[in-house]
Image 1 (tube, rainbow, N blue to C red):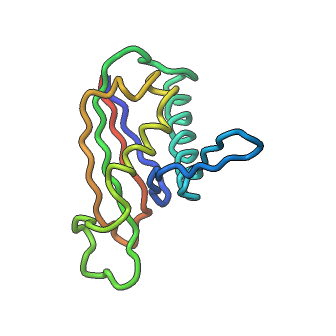
Image 2 (image 1 turned 60 degrees about the vertical axis):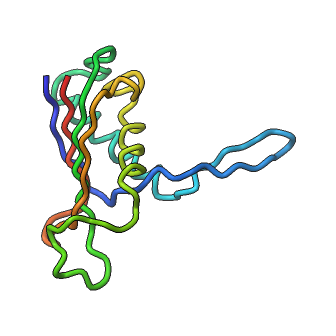
Length: 139
């Protein structure tokens, strides 16, 4: 089976956690304030895609999967000549991937450990197109 879709938005990395103690309890907080809204956008895009399939839950919860992710990053500043060229700046590709995989947990798989192969890339997007991520999942 094959599922393919695009999530528009500004891709955000899953950052490190910051910890502090409050009332004798350890509290962990995501260091990136943009990660949660981006993960939510990915989550809802998948739910809408699954609704088109006529399913609400995880269609292939126990199956090994492979994932392809292509991030289309927005131009920042004076990067006119870099359109379509690889994005070799921050954010780190592995942290972008981690945010998307975590957002898909519970929808396409029970745990992202089921993903046995990942192909990921990032490039600058043409200004006439929205930034975001192309996601393909095969099982």
